[in-house]
Image (cartoon, rainbow over the protein chains, first blue to last red):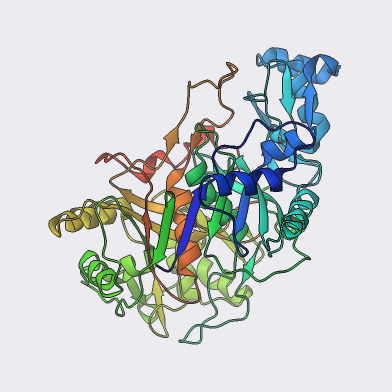
Length: 250
Length: 250
């Protein structure tokens, strides 16, 4: 039947520093009876990328600044975590009540610079976002190629957004396919330009993948099969980050 | 194979006022050889809902206010369209250069109150968002039930967002399932509360559906099969609209 098929990859081991994620994912998919195929898009939750890259920090090694300490104590947060949030940030976008929304060094706007203290693999640890998620995705795409597979890779995280309750999964790293599908300049049968000019397909793929991952069931990888993509080695999430002069909500 | 299957419903006729969308969708899916099944989620692009509900306006019947006229002329827009945008709005959120971001009467924040001049079925016409998309979705769910099908219904539209380029499809109306999946209060195996507290599943489903619709190929309906949902007749998108006191980006 035509259309998309999306499934979670179960049975992955606990991921530790140095893990060969593409190999582990490929083996786990095969063990499920659903081996990866060229043309698949593999959507990987950033947390296991971070773990594989050793982006896990022991909080007792972090000396909080007076600013981090004061604010953390006021809102009953862990000072070392707030210190990490600020170190990972390029800019604080909003700091209101207990909410701290930052622009990460990559340019993503999200809560707490994406620093994650939950399910980090142990008490007293925090997981940071990957240092360069596009580079991670490109490395994985290359590794899949070594395994004989032409796979597009998306690294995803779970972000909030203004105006709407509930978070959604979005893309933070990509390799092999462009994140945005542009219709700019195309006209409909009535001669009007399309109201929709560009879709962020990468974010839609990340959201679709979340539906089979479930944040509770802790399935960190999903496969999207049947989505047509044009191989493109220049892909980067930088094209999704809005430039500040176009940004009305800084 | 487990997981989700998502496919577009092709072969729908041009939708006009009074169309029985659930019947047309059900017949088109059957004609494709993929009949709808109870448990499916049907994601319908708002534009055909609007057309079925007669929310199409002839621009030459609209008298623009001086404010609408002046701004439209400055930015080379159609004054009657700008007048409709303002009439559909509860509040202008940002008006910068040619960009007009409003809060609709439903409470959604989007460009131009969702008023669509493109592919509206003819020159000189504009399509407004459905008046009450939740009510439309409930009516469709009820109609599917008359056809012997237990179907959750999502009505979707394509919105931009701050900070990130590219639009994505989101839900604007829902029936049969809650739009948000909450993990609040649940703890991970290490005793931390989940960083992710609530996911807007409805928006993720709308985004997933867009991947098979394509805005160009003009497939206005998609079916998501295999996603487990709990029937709930109290569902409404109002729970997704952030209350103003929690909104940092008004």
